[in-house]
Image (tube, rainbow, N blue to C red; front, side, top):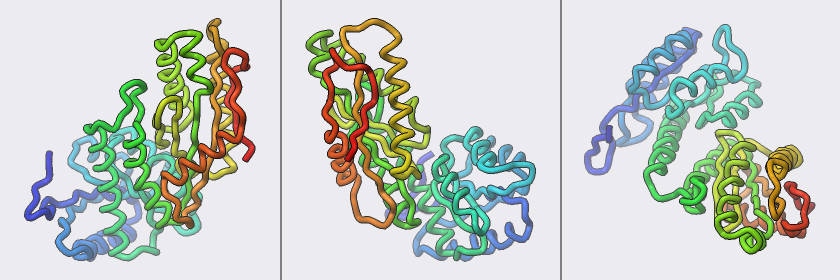
Length: 318
């Protein structure tokens, strides 16, 4: 249901569900929520509900009407990212702000990689920061949901197109800058697509692009963004990944390409060239800058002709 607005200001409350087993932490968060209600002038108020057990929180989610979840990642009888995974299974569209303890930076980073919109460290956040994190998570999810109804997808492959990729990656840049986070932009190109069109026909060339899209989606995680930028070129934002992951990513793509080329006899072998550009949160590079860097990294490797190549994912050595 669309939110009611008055002179451009939201007046419906943001419905927050806290899943937290520690009563003291729950009271502190509830008190902070009260202070957070006045942290942003003109902002909508909050409706706060608390579930002390994960099962109760999942039941509440199943009833609908939750705008954002504050989720303790240290719930009893769970480990690691299990609470987040179960919340995502119950409601894949609800935004989640993970709550972590001190010295759990690795777990927080993993939560972001698994689909959380943001995280907060218990005992180290203010009411203002809590309000900002909640509203950021809600706005990011609204943006992602809104993009689905706009023409930001590539008609051939069903992936995001260039415009959709730029829109959806912007929140990742802002979050990485605020939290000193990181991600990796990957450029992937089907080598010599013109030759495939020439020797096998344009319909076959289009089929190769569609199947390359499936191949890339199967290589990366659900939380990563995959897009067809133009022609034979694809792009991926790999969340919470650094440059040391390039060999792993290249190996995964190469294995998928090898299997693809081994499925049937064709007039060509598929070759996918890869390039990488890292973002560590401390720089000022835009997604456009990172795309250009990844392309430059990719074209550093000379593409091989499909009619002669052994199918593989080729990584540049820039």
